[in-house]
Length: 108
Image 1 (cartoon, rainbow, N blue to C red):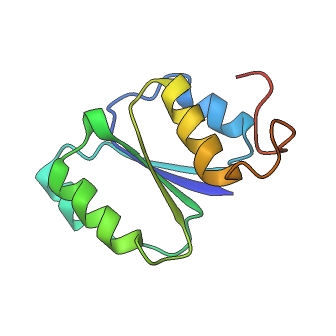
Image 2 (cartoon, rainbow, N blue to C red; image 1 turned 120 degrees about the horizontal axis):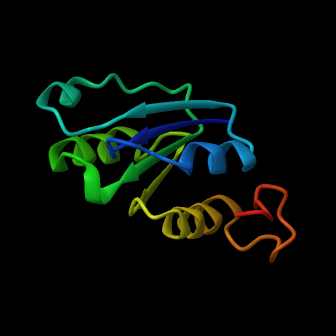
Image 3 (tube, rainbow, N blue to C red; image 1 turned 180 degrees about the horizontal axis):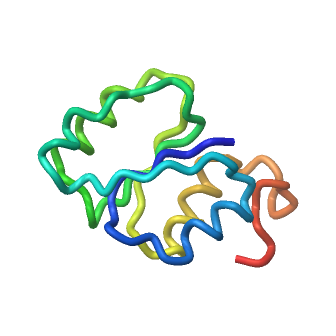
């Protein structure tokens, strides 16, 4: 699976935790600069993760509109891993497997 992370200057252990969840292709854009408003929206991403506490609001609005009707899942979360994990579990699993989901990392 592939993921585009928008927001956050440094990701710390978030990258490793995402790899444990099965994401192979991880792209990151800090989303704070005006130039990031020109970010090209691509359909080759499975999940877009927007870190709401570290992103330009106009960029978040643009991304939300661009991926709204697309095939990719858009997730809004704070930079804390516990919040990211909770939002991703809720969005990706949608309560389908109650704890036995292969997408859920047992170590995180």
